[in-house]
Length: 503
Image (cartoon, rainbow, N blue to C red):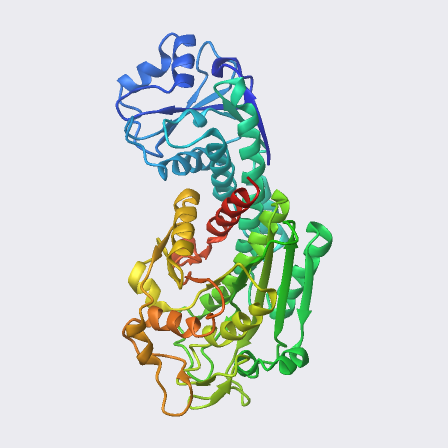
């Protein structure tokens, strides 16, 4: 699908459909007003008869509107005038694209940039428009038969969207937003694709191959550490989890070095459990298929790297992905085993299903070699976080409040929110063990917090934040699939940091 930035009057656009906004009060957006005047009150008459109430994300498709060049006009509800929240905007955009995807519309002219959001600039609106439009048309069908794929391709009719600015002077800002939106949606789509792939395809080796492919396509530096190299480094905790699977573990290291040589890098660490049975502490069978999403932390790191590479972001960023399976074969670790981590700290395994922290802790220790400015790990770590926050916000833990606030702000801006959770010393005793330096679980109470407390023991040498995305990385039920989160949050955070360092 092609996007372009244009300016001009709505009634003059000779395209398949023009999209304009309507508020609940019956107030017309400027483009809707322009069409209404050209059509001698056609839209006003429609509203008068109650066919459109202007509620957020409602739509009404009009055909053969007199006095205009377009074949169709799509009215989109913008909610209450003057009361629209930032989060309302992508909902309106998404509703408009989904409504037209079911029609024969191919070329669209959208005037939704006119939506009244005083706090948001044209660049932000355009970037969000592109991301919302791409997200609304996202479809994962690569594993389906050719006949099904052909049927789906026939349904995908929209090939071009022109995004109209009200003033030509805003075109450059909109163009900047367009490029940012395309880069971000590209990264989000990659994260979704990786998450949605079945675990017999998306293995640790497959993830490593995707990273290596980015050397040619995006100019990244990539290194893959094999089992023998990890053994030499003393990654006993990571390798303990991996030893139950026939799939070889991989430690994937990516580097995007576009900042100043003197600038210390931001390090992103993504949990890459490509399938999680729970190990010997095996999970219930119901919904275990969704444990293919246990590598969404890794997918978000790869997606973020794709986004910042396409933005050519002037920043030094390192990505570390420990990737393996958690399987219950005869060589798997058992409850009661004691593992020695790369840091030298020992861990009593009380539950093999708390494996994410066991692979992350060695990756967090490995991050020290890069002398990072800060480290952020991203993991589908605990079901407890889903109980605490549901599916709306990712859990955020940090050993530095300033970093936490920056991430929260970036999440608000990207509409990919996180919530600051406590990391108090009071919780640490729950990890006490009689037989090792710590246990890998701290009981049911405060499970997401004690998991973060566990990780914090391996992050003493740098500023660190942990994002628990167990509730936000994918959806269940009828809409089952990867969300691509928190690629928008991470990309926004890195962009903000690049702007600060280079201004």
